[in-house]
Length: 323
Length: 71
Image (cartoon, rainbow over all chains, first blue to last red):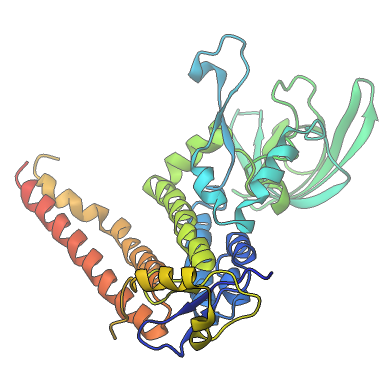
């Protein structure tokens, strides 16, 4: 027996709405807002839901620079007075409502697994040749020199494990003078030479020692620090760490909170959309028959069992459409 | 800062309030579309709801502005 719900408009008995398989439609509407309505042939509402909810969700994501959707966040040990010295982890309860948007919020779960995996190290996956923006430290007069250009990095087997070496080709921002530097890993750098592969920041931290000045003026710095781009799939919807969270709050202020509110409201509104796919609209229609072998027209519902018919008669239309 | 009336500071928050309009529009459309099936009814009801929410919130903003005058 097919389980089909047919709804009839109280103002126009020829206006019949079939919800096909409501459970499937509800699932589709959760996965992609409005997809359930499109499956039921209610294109206008499907498109409307899709634009409004996905628009609101991605508007929030854009306002929060791609970072308001995450499963949990970490606070530094010193801020939380944690005895064992490790960062403490907290659930982001806002993700519950973001999860209701469906597919667009699901990468956060995958990214959490990737973030926690042992393969998320400070090492390079392979040679990289990317843009670089940063500074040179430790020059003759102790001044910080801003530099921009391209950096080429590769990993080699060192005495104490894998080591990063590279080359920087660019210019000093102050004088525009071109420089060419050979770089190597700084073993005394406590924070490591390279940021983790997967982290909620589009920029990856890098700190290397200048091994040799191939070309450049006298008195250049001995240490290079800055950032290189991190691929989109390695930072989007990744759990936030304390410095990143503080950076977002400091730079974006209320906009950061609004960004999260947009994504939360999008998820909460999708409850209405899922319910609409499962039960139909609240006012325009009322159920004519619950279980039928075939779809009935409203006129054929008279042939239903007396119990069902009585139940239908008892149920008054919830409301009439007022145009 | 004493020479600036504090109630004027509310004006600094106005750019944030602009976000209220698309947010209210989307909420009104989705809510109304979950109540009705007919496109015309959806648009009509959502416009009415949008106006109700906007007028209510602007009225509340005005009330808070008046109450915070000379604070």
